Length: 476
Ligand code: GLU
Image (cartoon, rainbow, N blue to C red; front, side, top):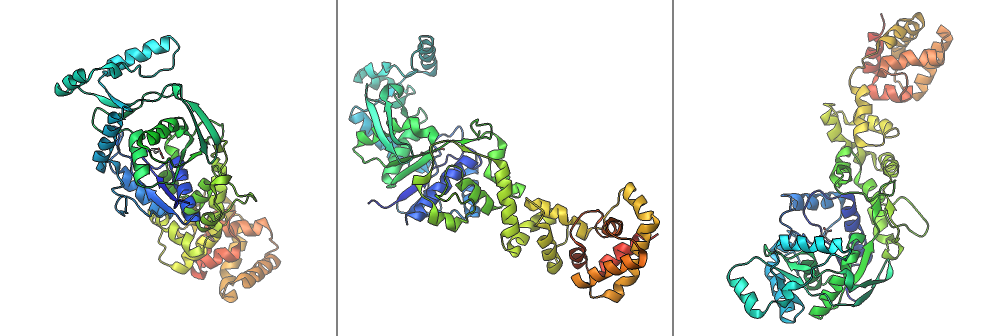
């Protein structure tokens, strides 16, 4: 068996999107589960679509998520460089080889000529493809055009009437006819290779064992297989991952902002939840378990259990998972991850003990990291009451409860669950006020709202002094 070497090969045309993360994650998990290597290759040969900084951002995001790259740009490795624009001579050498063996040819057709051709074919209801008129050029004509500096591309000559049968690890046996394949441009007029040539050449020289990529590339596979045949190379194992669909089953578009991984991270989703959620977009284990750490996934993942049918991107499930991880990861971890959102709201978290108590209470009630900071605000900033609440606090009953507590607190100190329960009971006995009538004024005074954590937690977070002060401030 060949060693397992898989690559994630994004084009740096924008943010890493959910589909890209799914491919990267499956590549990584497969490599880890097989003791293989995970390679990052930057496919930057379409200069018109390149976004400056996108490759660096993508590497940062993968790193942040814990998807460790074994070989790639900056890290290096035995088959570098791992950025395609640094490998141009290799693609030219191989395009030349294809021309020498009669499997590729130069095409000088202008874009006007090509669009006329396309319109005519469309009008006749034909499959739109290059009609090979430049294949008829004599060597002399080609040389003349070259010496006059005419712009041109190099095209692959696809075989006629050939059926391409190949196996795909997920789709099993696939068959496609060459009549559905155009004579693919391999080298563009700007001298850069297209994805098709560069990916095949690189996958070969980087000794990639499994090409794991989105289903949208399935229709290109015959061209790639043909390239492997022309070069006399052994093709890798093909693995085409199912589409990711919205809940209405339309294709999840990468142009929609909300599919960028960075946007989920900045909204306060945890990497653990994102990875777990994305892992299940097309894969599940035999027991349909839902919750996995990255380590669990490395042990359990298998390509055989990836499904053929589209995977539904269900945000409610991601929210549910995020809530699960917010509640269940180590308290320190959540406290650390939530800190920036507290700083954003200018909440001072330097009293670590208070901060941790807040997080412990808040995480039982929140789905996203910023919500923790929103929820905890009441423990740090004296609450502002609405007009209706102010009137409620002025009622005789409310004032009775507040005065009773304000006087009693020192006697019941230290405040803990037991002493607070005793206080509530005694207050009821002394004032005849109980239930909602007792709790609401207390809560409004302490945290500015009628609902919230139980009293022992509230007192514990605020501390005796602050709690007493807040109650006193409400006594008129
Ligand atoms: N550069 C291609 C992309 O952006 C990679 C496809 C592949 O993995 O072969 O999706």
